[in-house]
Image (cartoon, rainbow, N blue to C red; front, side):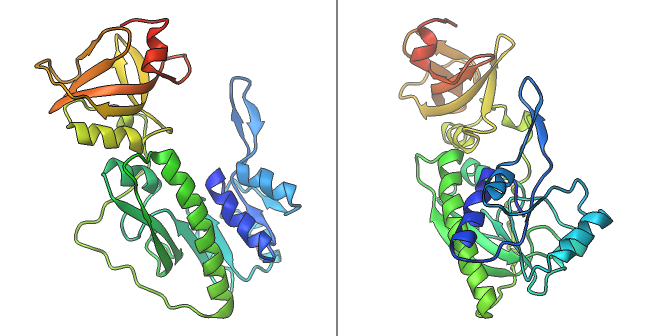
Length: 297
């Protein structure tokens, strides 16, 4: 059970290691782009290419879907980047249903762990497999592995590494369950749990009253998607890469200075933020020097 690109390596590694994937459950096709043509989820396209049956229920409690799912007589269900399951689904297989989560649980429960780990400036994260129970991301841990967070990571690079490490952990977990060779670890809720809620557009607006470090982590935690943004003269600019500028001025946070050729600096709480790469409204992503070849502020 999975939908985005993140789930494909986990499906692929099971197939390549001779596990019988009876079916794939994914999200319904959605209209995308200007023409609003129906687009299939990445997992569906991969599964159909390997002749695996695909189910796309709109309602996971739908009696017809439940009946069809039971007919596959699955021993085990594997969930990677899907949606919350009703108990009638996750309790169905004899060996249970486990989920791959892109954090070191119990920290960063929620929909956007990769983003929040970077936004909060963490030095390490990881992947966790756990048996699903009713409360989201709280089930007993089967396996867990750490992954370092590098200073130049953004959400894209970290996502890709966790996608591959996660696939290997899925294989390890399936093998452990098949052999009956694993021990479960109850999630101990620590005193200060850091959540990873879904990120909305308004949450992506840069707060220039924050420090250089916080703004740098905020931008890389949202790059390349959904992207941090700021406004200049009522136009929205998505910001993908920044750095701390050497000099500082006394201008107010949120104001900027530029030579309209090679640099654009925004004042923040403790200095200047240098914009390296951004995307003007209605245009493509570009470097600041590219932008100033045909534009000025």
